Length: 158
Image 1: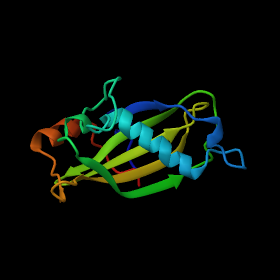
Image 2: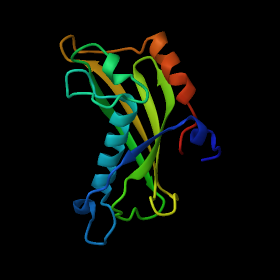
Image 3: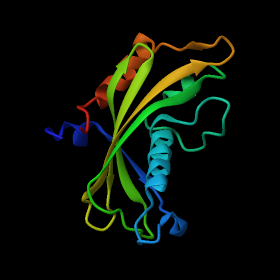
């Protein structure tokens, strides 16, 4: 990553690790890293409408204002493991930012920091598409939604 712009524009989402997240090597398993990214994404953007109760407000309330029934589908994950993510009994900090918000796709950047020394362990990027099953169409982001995301936009982690 060339710039630290993501540090200023990202929202910080603490995500607890679970004892069972470790693999036989004592590191957080790569499958569980994807779960951590998902938890951070929901903390940052909210619970998708109709899929659970939003008790703690989202930092960037995007998912909760989408039309009822809209699905936030993962189109792609890209993950780079910088060093092992060790289990700690305190939450890791996950930086979440918007890489791009275009038409019908939202690309997010992530950085998972070790709770012990705040060093980056994982950098990731996720591309989402919003899909309306009833009409079998993608949902395009509105100008207002893109404006909501703009203050949190920074370069790709790759």
